[in-house]
Structures are given as C-alpha cells and as structure tokens.
Length: 313
Ligand code: ADP
Ligand code: MG
Image: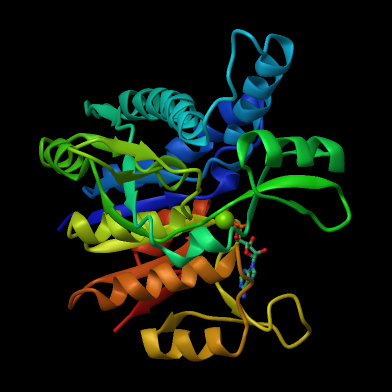
C-alpha cells in the first residue's frame, strides 16, 4: 500500500545557480516520480541556501544602486522569492516527468510560513551567517543603521548573522493537507519556510531568521501524520567516524542508538546533525513512523528497504 512520505531535498537536488538548477531538477524529478509511480503520496520540501543568497545579493545591489527608491529587502521576502523560484522549476520538471510516464497528477507549490517562538533562545545567539562578505566598515554601518548582527566568518570577512530558531508549526498546514488529500504532489516549506510570529490581531510578522529545512520537514511530516520522513542528501548512508579510516556506514538505528552516536559527536553540526535529530524526532513521534536518510538517486531503493540509514523504534 502507498505511504504518505515527506521528502526533504538537499542542496545537491537543486544545484547552485540557474542552469545548474534547471539540470538538477530533471534528475530530482526522476527520483520523485519513481515514488509516485510506486503509489506513494509525496510531499516535497527543500533547502534554499544558494538561491536565497543569489536573491539577497541582487536585492542588495538594487538598494545600493538607488537607495532613495529601494529599501533593503527583508530576509523573509527573500525566502518567499526563493520558494517561488525553486517551486517553479520543481513543478515544471515533475509535471514533465509525470506526463512522460503517463501519470496525470497536479504539482503545486505552497508559499509556506512557519511559526517560530519570538522567545526562542536562538534569537539571543544568532549563529547562521548569511549573504555576502563585507568589510568591517560596511558591517559596522549595517549594525548602526539597521540593527543587524554581524560577525567575522573564519577569516574570510564580515557577514550578517541571523538566528536559527526551532520551527513550531506550519501556518498553511490545512491548505497543504487538503491538497495532498486531493491527490496533488505538494512542494512546501522551501528553505525551512518563511519564519514568522504572531503580533497584534492575526498579523504574522516575518522574522530575520532562517529555519533549518530538516527540522521544518520534521514538523510538516508530523502535522501531516506522514508514515515516513525521507531526507535526501549527498551521502547514501550516515556514518560513524565519518571521513576517518575506521568509518562505518549505518543501516538501521533506534532513536536511542542515534542519540548515543550524537552524544559522541559523530555528526557534523549544520550538516548531518540536524538530519539525524529530525529523523529521531519523527521516528519517535508515533508508533510505526520511520525516517530514512539516503542519496537522492537511491530514494526508490531506500523506500524498498535496500539502502540508506533507517531510523525507527
Ligand atoms: P544538504 O544540502 O542535503 O542538507 P549537507 O551538506 O547540509 O547537505 O549535509 C550532508 C553532508 O553531511 C554529507 O554530504 C556529508 O559530507 C556530511 N556529513 C557530516 N557528518 C556525516 C556523517 N557522520 N555521516 C555522513 N555524512 C556526514
Ligand atoms: Mg544542510
């Protein structure tokens, strides 16, 4: 029987500029269409690092060229633009691949807002560098004029830093659920979603923050009561002693085993660690749920239990 599967696409599924993305989504669409062909309900999420970087750079250039007319573009608006741009390419690549296989199924992108807690301790300790490198003087100007937080990034120059708060809930969850239940393939939570919090009345205010796409995917999968969360990335399996001579690939883990490896520091923060954390949280959220981390091209084999790292109770 078909499963409800939330699939998080990593950077390798999208490339890092326009022609790369155009080529990469074709490959991505084939991997996703395999699962749809096998009868699964698929909901896609994706990262947006290079894309939002490109948009921010273009918007900053606009402000520089005509500061009277263009104010600096808020990060939330840049994330929304990146969701639209990536959704556009994914929708078309999937539409084409499904039609080639004789499958008539709508594909739709939902511009997704994700609620964060304005009291999240992450706001007091921003950790995520974003945007272009700057000189110290440029950085100081942004601090004075726009109240940005900045930091020196590993000797390469100054960058703006923003918080990476935990996602609480998906604002558009009912829309996403209705579309999934109507049989559509939905692209949602791009770039981890547009971070927002509620202010007076029902107003949602964009937060100057970025949400980890693996954590947002876990919240989406939980709220959709999915069977499986699949995180597709650049490695076929998760390893302990990654990159060292004693490296060992992992096939199946319980949440407790995964946590023990986390505590031993086997997973790099900012890359593999959030994936394993999201996978553990989802696998624990209800009986019968499991998470899989594998390579994009191995999605079908992974769902069939032939490869990847499976996390289940
Ligand atoms: P994505 O764009 O898919 O989120 P990331 O680069 O953030 O990808 O994270 C995936 C990367 O994490 C892998 O390509 C690998 O280089 C790295 N990594 C770090 N620690 C591990 C580990 N223990 N096992 C496997 N991969 C690891
Ligand atoms: Mg990542």
